[in-house]
Image (cartoon, rainbow over all chains, first blue to last red; front, side):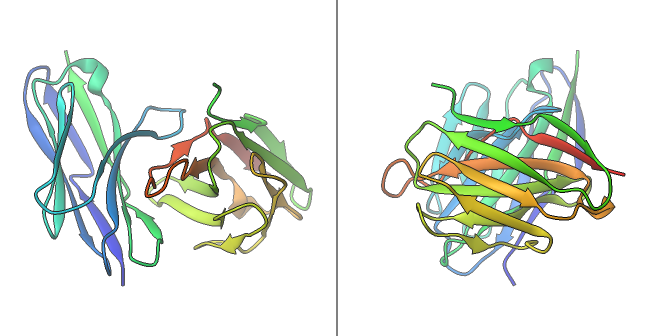
Length: 109
Length: 114
């Protein structure tokens, strides 16, 4: 069964304290892995697409990486405005898109 | 360029009432989606439309119907609302260019069924 699991469910960091969020997946024929950011009361906002193992994408303090079984979202020297829920989604070979339940990130000033 | 818009933003219904949630996108995307988001459950796909004129069931279609009115618009209808349909509903679109599958979401409709 196609599945996406994100960990941890919640993470509290001090401002400037770098860390990583994990997204592990089991799908038949990965076509793409996506990261989104969701602020309270808003819709998810697209961040990155990764297509193949070894690929990396960066945007400001965020860097996403992909292996054959998981993806990491690395947050370097985070600021309070990085606080949000981060969602991972995968597109399987049949084009089905499966979302993880997200990681709630809170950055303390 | 408004992206994906949804109306209404909030709605309260009584059990058994009906309503239609509206969604429109101005990005010339081929595919459109309806999701519901509940605490602890994540985003679950209700229906999707891969192109104008086609619709398909997602993970949780029971109690809902959809219409792809044209390339821009995709509506979700609740014929007889139930308390279990209390949720936040998001519309999304994707596929402006070949091989581009990332989704762009609207701001959501917060629905309460009493």
